[in-house]
Image (cartoon, rainbow, N blue to C red; front, side, top):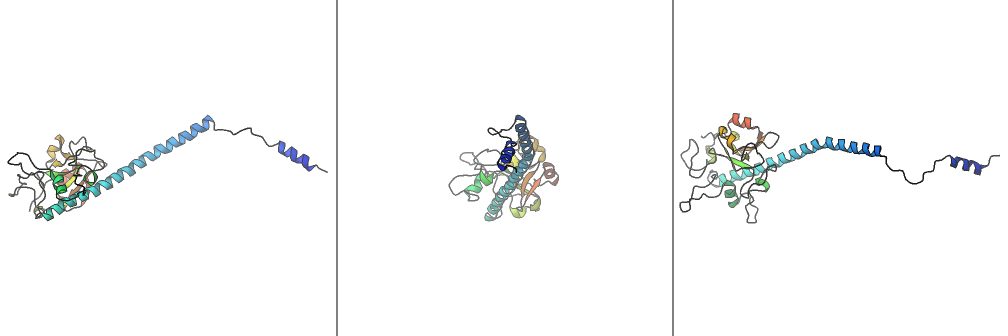
Length: 242
């Protein structure tokens, strides 16, 4: 007859006994580190695309608000858009504030705290560096729809910026959009672009901040993403006057 206690002792003796816990080997650690590095490298472009898409969506929303403020200002002022800057004062010779400050002081996109938020928040493209308290990364087309107070748009006798009802093709006319102080530095915003494309190389040009595209709010209030070449070909920076 078999002794069950003896069998149990023999069976237990075949089980390996570990003295302490076994750690990871160097090879295992290198493999895990390599896998993490590969996953991080694969996910980085995806994260960048998501971030760029978020910036583009925020920019379009901001630009739509700025464009709406310009249009509301015009509707409240007999269809007349604000001037780029008012004409120089006879006493001091100095001009008044630029158009974003005019809008803020008139109560459009005002923060309610007595400050001019024109260089931050919805006034500014999220891919544009901070430039000044008085303007962000969005600019109007100078000498087209919006002009200095004492000047006249082409084909118009009345001084100052155009009235909305004089714009023949508002759906194809630049009202406000991504603007750069210099075309090679799109992250440095400006408050106006030249209406004439042949002057863009020297500065005050549309800013291609979003995957080679410029966000533009047209004079009818809708926002589009266009390349600089498309802007040039469609001549949207030139106002066709009725």
